[in-house]
View 1 (cartoon, rainbow, N blue to C red):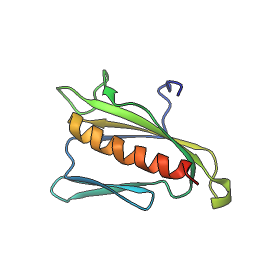
View 2: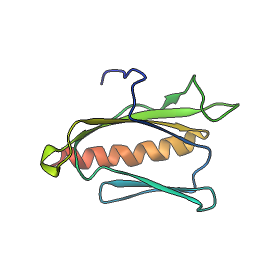
View 3: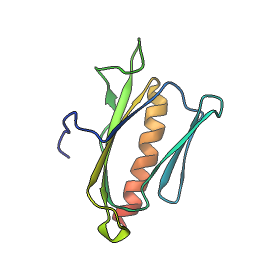
View 4: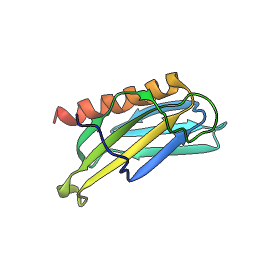
Length: 114
């Protein structure tokens, strides 16, 4: 998988997460004592690429180590969406980065099985 330039549709930074879970092909994030809730919908993706989790030299969250990975969604034109969306994730906690990464890896596998 080629390394991506700093060219993202979106960057998401998480100080802490309480839960990451998958429903269908949508990855859900819950954090901040349930005050934050969001998701990345992959139902209309024809392909999903997921990079490795790596240390992030350009921190977004303040002092301390950060971990991150990126995803690239190739959208299915038959679902009335087209093009690519790139999302770069930053996490304060490596275990939380790994948990989110595993969720996206599982979704990527399910897309490739179609």
